[in-house]
Image (cartoon, rainbow over all chains, first blue to last red; front, side, top):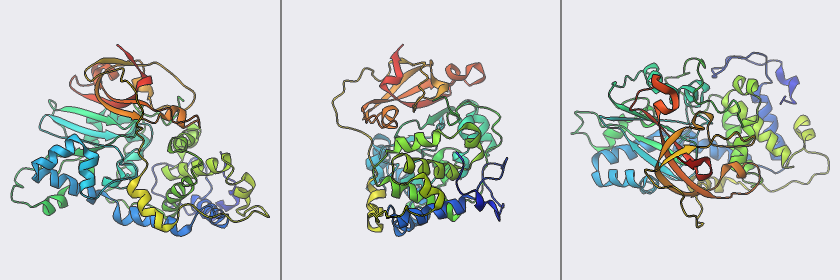
Length: 213
Length: 219
């Protein structure tokens, strides 16, 4: 599949920080996408303002702070925790988070005995309403390939040592079910309120590649 | 299809490209193509499954060369042409063909909020007697369809245990090929890491996959 916009290759600035190295010079995707957008707008197939709204939503509204609120509530409210582990979609919707790529949620809880890790080996399925768009590493061939065969090595590489005796459960998101890891609440946080706790919960902890400090 | 997208279990793919602080989009065009995928999808000419399959059709060497959102560019362009919303000539020239009348986009700014908040549930309320129950041993079928499937190679032929019945869901294998939703039951299945990878894996570790009934047989 070659791009029709080959003439656009000149002037290609190359300060990429992508997950690949170029073997040959591809057409500049920025120019290609710009040309595609203007064609689709001219044909009346898309509304550019709607694109702005989608980008704005994921840049500013739909991100891991949503998931962090869910986790913090589960830590302080045992009844909510139970609802989250029983019917995550409904429990998450209680806090106002729902929708695209989070229609069918399952929450899996880390304990002293069990560590959960989420991956999508086939593509990049990720619970958007609670975590926003996935980071590059989550979508990378390296992570997708290794998370299932060498989860302990992957976690070590990302800075998390899981004790030998702990059971690791890897969740490969092969269908429309999206997984949210409920990390362990750190010791010594009994005095913290929900908001302070939420501030500590990271995206990586909710994927299962980090602990909450 | 035994394609390059089916990465689970491959080795030597290099270090994980972790970035400490990462923007939502690294370049503005990434956000534009991401949003364009939603906006063109609103014409309902193709399903999510079809758009995923389209990206899987990118040849292995290209697939690995491209960044994530470059694959999305390929996927959207191919689907637009395949479904007749645009022509190859229009893509090449960047201009609508002479004499085409301007259409009205289905996704307007006011519809974006509701679209994202409601999503598109993939479960279907159709009667279907479950063939398997939680706790039942099963085996993933050893199948190699040339079309779309969500049964990864690394699990095929392997023994697992049903953990949970998710209910009835749209079947991507047919839906991606424009052959209808053909909903069927979906289960969470636990595979012991040693059954998948041998003794190099730890005995207590496991991998859970969501699998449609037709991916499974009784063991």
